[in-house]
Amino acid sequence: MRMPLIAGNWKMNGSLSLVEEFGRAFAGVSLPVNVEVALMVPFPYLGAAAQALGETAVMVGAQTLSDRPAGAFTGEVSGAMLRECGARLVLVGHSERRALFGEDDAAVLARVQAALHEGLTPVLCVGETLEEREAGRTEAVVLGQLEAVVEALDATQRPRLIVAYEPVWAIGTGRTATPEQAQAVHAALRARLARHDEALAAGMRLLYGGSMKADNAAELLAQPDIDGGLVGGASLKVDDFLAICQSAG
Ligand code: PEP
Image (cartoon, rainbow, N blue to C red; front, top):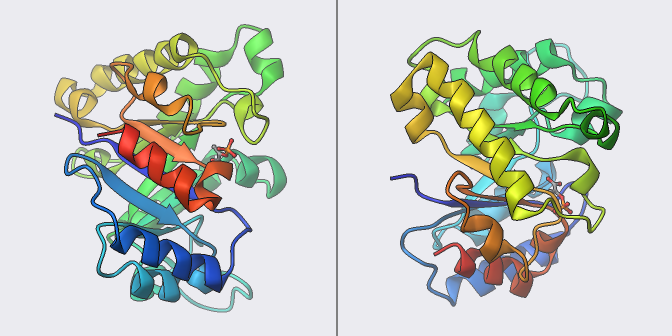
């Protein structure tokens, strides 16, 4: 049985007061016991988030990491630093990192390996652009992004991954994939994982991301191969994010 995960991605948004608001709100509610929740906050808020959410079930995560362990890499943040500040998960290969910061499949793989090396759970993001979808290349793109990582990992590392399918055309646009569109891609991802190992495919959590909101989360999460959500905009409003978490239970 795969435990659903709802992960909020604040991107370069939020504030210390929002971190505290989330801490207070989550301390005062009971989340469904069969759901995991994480909040991926900007680097400077990690420590405060770990403290504010420390008494709750919400895990803290980061949005990227360096592929290097330490050294003269001005501006970079290592996996070890993330862990020290309380992060347990880290997004890798978010479409904004791929498109705006030039992270190709090799860079994404190096970051997944760095995360695993530090005991962090990498949440590998894959997804096609609108142009790629319209050209009928959705599966080729997302399976290629998946394989670029999975093929390079060994059998002990692969089960430690979480994958998030995020169609680029649905991120921050208000245009959500239909449950059927999302389910079709999730099923293709799971079938590809099964080529490596049936148990790996059966156990791996595949999240959907792309304009998930309180009013569309339940029908997306009801799909058999959708095991949770990666939530951008709606994770910045505590009531909306809580409602999504509740609908996953
Ligand atoms: C995201 O940033 O991963 C995301 C899915 O954003 P949004 O929910 O705003 O589309």
